[in-house]
Length: 392
Ligand code: SF4
Image (cartoon, rainbow, N blue to C red; front, top):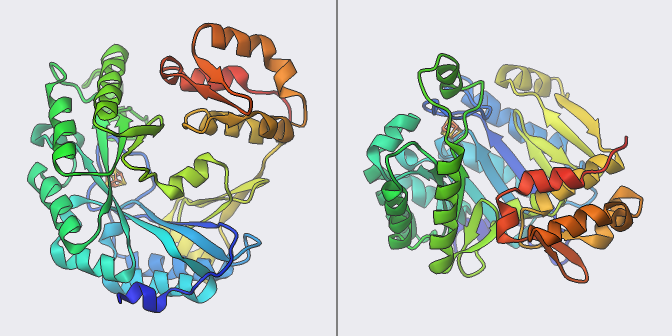
């Protein structure tokens, strides 16, 4: 029996709750990334201790205390030392009841995943890894300023499988400039050869507050070619489908039902608690956004204050968020839920728009839900925003 079974409480009967922990450190800044992280690790221990304290301060944020998914995101959570991960997991288990079969995911970078570290993660209870591979092609990794090599990407997946972590997701980035689609095909084939059960595929985007953003402004790089990006997306979707991967969310593909339970909870608008600098929380009626600054976060938590900004969600906000996330999934959006969230007759006010979208073969329906078609998935955000409702 591993330590996880020793330390986790047993939930006999529970309502679902989800917990996100943001670990805001990276060894090196990737050129495309605008997440909150710092490469200065001098206060890592203080931040981790503050996150543990926040877990205690926020234990009553949601009415139920039973946890079904835990997600260590970042940043680079695989930079956590054994004692730091233990502190966080022990704190969670002292203040919540974690379901026996909880999905516990840790985002990891290949350069951190040596055998000993993987064994530590596994025995601590991590049962799912989300590995930032991005590409198996060395020049692409250099272009993105990833710290790991192509070889490390492959080896870490095999080692994780050897130590017993079978539930592995990898991130791939597509639309990286290249003369043709050969490298993308090679990346996909590598993932198949490694027997990966889940793939998250993201289009390269150039965000203003990144190295790529500043180079674009100075015309040192070209913007991403939209047609090339659309072609790559189509190749991905078709190749993954042919090989048994279900596109259960626009950017997420799973074999044999290995969905991310944690991320699915966001897309289904389930409440969650997020702790750590820049983490968000959602309780069904409002969102809270923690400060995106490590030093200010630590200082506030030291004085027992949660450094969060509160946003109360109007019926229109809740409806529009549901459209934006729900339409991207294979579960679609539920007609009754839209009526309830919006507090008005969604069907009748949107009938003309919906009929036009069905005529264009962008959406389809059954008696309960509306769904995007494959053609509609290419315009998901536009379709959702065309269906948005106005109001406070
Ligand atoms: S992509 Fe991941 S590893 Fe790279 S800077 Fe962003 S959070 Fe850090």
